[in-house]
Amino acid sequence: MDVLPPQMSAKDEGCFAYFTMKNRIPQILTKVINALNQHKNEFFEKHGEAGTEAENKAVSLISKIRNELQADEPLLPLTDNWVDTDIWNKYLEYQHSLLNENNKKISWFHSPWLYVECYMYRRVHEALMLSSPISDFDVFKESKDQNFLESQEAIMSLCNYLEELNRRIKNLDEHQLKDEFFKLLQISLWGNKCDLSLSGGQSSSQMSSPLTALEDLKPFILVNNMDNLWSVLINRKKMSQEKFPSIRVDFVLDNAGFELVTDLVMADFLLTSKLATEIHFHGKSIPWYVSDTNKNDINWVLEELKAANTKCMFECGVNWELYFKKHTWIYQDHMFWTLPHEYCTMAQVAPDLYAELQKSNLILFKGDLNYRKLVADRKWEFTVPFHQALNGFHPAPLCSIRTVKAEVQVGLAPGQGEQVTVSDPNWMTTGKYGIFQFDGSV
Image (cartoon, rainbow, N blue to C red):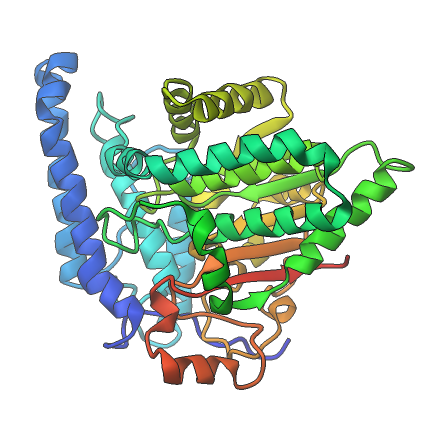
């Protein structure tokens, strides 16, 4: 590959990165401070004066981050002792070396947006780590839980649909099975609109049944490689009866709440249809990007479903918990997912994770942050092939399933991006458009 295009940054006023750093991120930090204040009494009841002091310290540290950001101050090394602290600080030195060549400063608005945004969430984690004994408090938990609770009607309709589908799945021919596969993929795609970091932490719940709107939403799918996903799995299924004992699908998760349920529904269907025999879910090891999924979020959703007074939700909770216990579903997290590195560096930075992904038959990367890391958040032309933008990241057949919420998109047909821009100038930042973008052999 020739010279790579530059990464996006907030230094250009008017771009979405600038809007994010100027408006959305300070809003999110204010919500973090509010979440800590709201739990002040709980911290005192649990830990006494030490809890009160820890809350005050955490609030002070978060306020400091917000002030540094708004003043566009230089980025500082991390001072906690988390497993990734040294990697982060070395990355800061690396960014210094890159920008010093051009006499630029490493600051909130002048560094690559992908790096700075990840750095902000890591600094929030640092603030908690330095505020023992409340270090394990998830400052984003309540907004994630609220997203799930406000989406009850949609979740119930989805669980009910899955229950009906599982009942008749053995009687479906291949064409009908493919139709159901496509339908659940689309639900998983549009579930990705429920992103709390995009809304500054405001509610983004799914209030109505997602099943009824699928036909109307089809024109908004700009890249549709669902056929490739079907081919990968159905071909493997046919061969598995002769050669292969297992078919593995990996979900690199995005949002908790409603979107997580859509992913679990999809995973359930893959098992019952025998399009997969094992599912691996990759989540975050720390609270991240407001609504990103971690292990506690999955456990909480399973408990909520089991406690539901609706039979179909209860049965989903029980069945899904059993899948995890039997290791048919496997949850994994790795610190790489909360590093600032683009995925083309994974083989060097996290060779163990890259080797793990190489065992997969299909990797589904959910959401916008995964897409930005897949294509390194660069100012690519719309028509640059996805394979090229991945820059050597090819562990296994993979697909980005993403509603578009950042100003980066590749693999479009000639003129397609420009045409959408004419009809909808803000199309890249609203989550109104979606993609199923595949790379790999079928």
